[in-house]
Amino acid sequence: MSARRVRISNDSLNSYGSRVLTAGMNVEQYCRNPVLLYMHERGNVIGYVKDLKSENGEVTGELVFDEASELSKRCKKQYEFGSLRMVSAGIDILELSDAKEHLVQGQTRPTVTKSKLFEVSLVDIGANDDAIVLKRDGTVINLGKDGECLLPLLGKPNVGCPQRSEQAPLPSVARQLNNKPQKQKVMDQKMLALQLGLPETADEAAISAKLAELKASKEDADKLRKENETLQLGRITAAVEKAIAEKRIGEDKKQQFIELGKKIGVEDLESTFGAMSPQVKLSAVIGHPGGASTATPATYKKLSEVPSDKLEEMREKQPDEYKRLYKAEYGMECEI
Image (cartoon, rainbow, N blue to C red; front, top):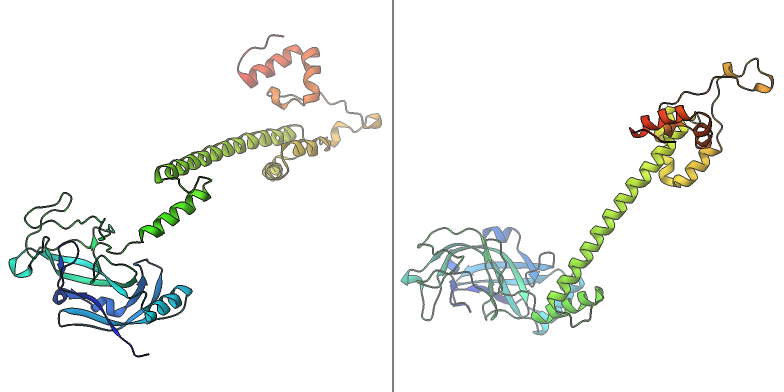
């Protein structure tokens, strides 16, 4: 099949009453990376433009499909069959002019006198027969019949679009004449609604509300999880410190047993400590029949250091010591 050239852009009036002059369009940068997209979607590369030419008031080229994806293969078949035939150019606006020599009959907005081609797309339906894409302040705008134009009307500045003098430089502008079709948007909205557990007839407000609800629920769950983790870590640390105080493990093993507690839980950790015997100094048992210890009672600094099975005994037999430790632990007197 012989290659056919397609018009990418020309000087004709577009659907918003503006024009892009071919003579002022810089295509050098694009020629270094002549990417061909589908529907102006980044990531949807379907090939490249071959033999790009800017002459006789129009920019033309030959479309080459890489067939590296199913999308590219499908686009090539539809392009060759003729059901997909429109090409749209992505253009950065550099200068505007409302000078009379740049206006034609029926024009209502300034002419783009200087611009830069940055991409070319194969599209299904364009805003007009010579579809283009313009950029303005990084905002993508659909120039279809329902689109919003940020170019000023001739002799009447638009809100949010200051009137520029002739040949005044503009910031890089992005504007899309061929956004995703409305039918596709509706299909995507229905799919999202069903995924959220909503009826497919749910509108954007209902979908937004559901998304906000799910976000809030996730935030609450994350907060609760963090609080629980903090509480568990506190219990584990207390159990380890108690085991150290009871001489069941050494101080140097503290972090090791904290990490173990995170894995097995505080209950299993306490059971593990319960199966351990407190370490006893040899000097405390030498010379005593049966190894019985006559060492003096341990001296504690606070109530939490007293083994749980000794607390009740201390409360009954050593009330003064119990009160001292209680005050050291909680900073207040204990009434027994």
